[in-house]
Image (cartoon, rainbow, N blue to C red; front, side, top):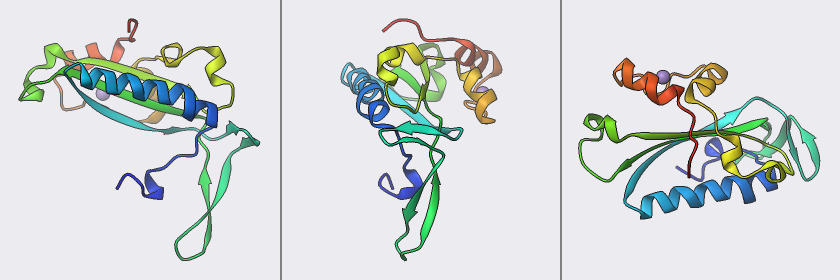
Amino acid sequence: MTFLMTNMVPQAPDCNRIVWKDLESYERQLALEGNEVYIFAGPYGSGGIGDKGLFYEIPVKTKSGEIQKMNVPEFTWKILLVMPEGDDDFFRTDSYQTIAVCVPNKQGVHKEGDWTSYVCSIDDLESKLGYDFFELLPDEIENRLESSIYTSR
Ligand code: MN
């Protein structure tokens, strides 16, 4: 399912190959250090600056040869839910840590800092996206996780 067009987002090369890639390396590190990492990611807004300039959409050819337009997002966001390896994930919320980022989809994005420069709260993402993450958790835990902003690496 990972390689379907419906699961792909056009990302500026500097965003994809530097900032996003570094975050993916960190996710791998967390997993190798004995954590489970749940990852949520997606696009937000319209208008990204790639190596050919600003685009709001790009043409994409479907399997049947039809040309369709694909949105180029202004940001790509990600939420990591991290916990030490174990069982019954839903019942050990005390060990949960979350990391949320919202990265501008543009060339040169790495010059303003690595992925830690783009951390935000899940509350920020929820108000931008209109999604409600972790809605099945008790409100007290949901509120704690969603209002926090990740600070240390
Ligand atoms: Mn929520």
